[in-house]
Length: 273
Image (cartoon, rainbow, N blue to C red):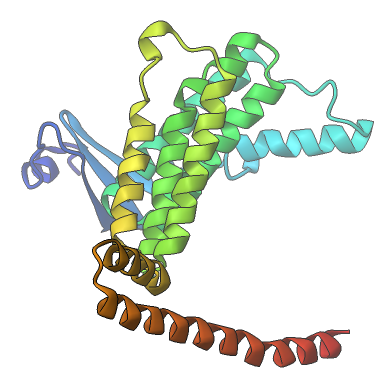
């Protein structure tokens, strides 16, 4: 008789308190699974689709099922007015979102940032969907406490993907956009007096921004301008003259590249017309 005891599996994978311990394994069905070690066992999740592998009402997820219901309602009535999510619908969507939370947290530890971006974007969509269509106000607001966390994790995933490609300016733009989105949200909600300090999610993104800025290649013009100002201020005029010549040469070179590119852009416009 086959044993259902997990002791043998768990014995070879000790639980480490205070750490998120995850791994990828190949399932018996030939598909990759993600496992998260817990104190009393483990969670196993599908790598794609709904984490538990279920297809509620034949859809990829409950969210997709309700989105299909919204589309059908809008097609029939010509508007989304009258479409509502019941309290049970919202509770089920919240339970489903927890599954995706466990998976994107695991994927972040594994540095599988594309999956983190996908699942955090999906859970942000759940927040928006419930806020717009829940019948009860409590259900419209129940998940809003997690919005900043989701924005932060989504932003970190996008920034890390850009960093992997050495696209530091792109990564910086993602972080700036995430901070702006978070600040807009915080301005739109009432916060208690004990929440007046900067949220931890904002602090984390600011730290990531500082880390990226240290790796962004310096603009040679800005650097030389600073050196030139310092040289003039300290009356090192010979050095200032050399720096001024270098600055002029770089600017001439940049103007030359722009003027060389202009005819090409003109020809491309003619071809597209």
